[in-house]
Image (tube, rainbow, N blue to C red; front, side, top):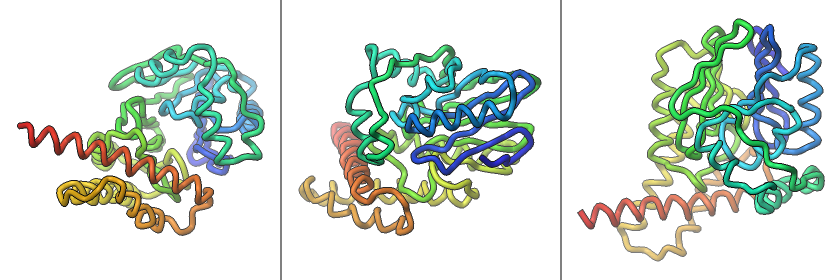
Length: 287
């Protein structure tokens, strides 16, 4: 655990997503939860070493399975975007097996502990912005659509720290399998043009980064969109789009993630963005 600003803590070494915590006079405000039960329990214990008070809220920055499955270990009310709250409400009593299988394939050792635990629902949600005051600390939540419809960012004005969720990731390609890439690019531009000084950027995954990383993520998305746009306009077969996989994988030669898992994610991304561009192309032709 690293204290990156007064009373602001992060952990980037868990397998999966980054997690953060803001210590207030009333207790902890947690930002996301580790992806695997063993690490979620570890995080919960470490948070309790920061203050004798309980975790007051858990903020979820989107509804990806590796963020929502272990929220119960922090035993705190959940705050999320309304789309994330809707997603959680859409599950019956247990999380889908598909979410568990995807996480287990990424880390089979930790994945053994995954189970269809009861779904935790959001206690509070918002659509555009939300301001949270707790124990004399201001926390600003804002919609950051793109990675998912329920993606949000977290800004701490007193410290200049911003948690971007999956709008920004480092050391791995952005996950575009269910993205609105046009909205994602607008979100990145919003963060780049943030009205207040940003001293530290905490991505959803990977090491803390500089503003230059925002440009790198935007470039990745723009490049995939352009390649697939050109592919469609050239009337090439859809099945050939996976030929671009290595072009995108090779942008991250030092990633520690399993290569086969990454290849699947890039394939999903290519398929999704192809459909996204194809729909726009068809609509333009109709007009």
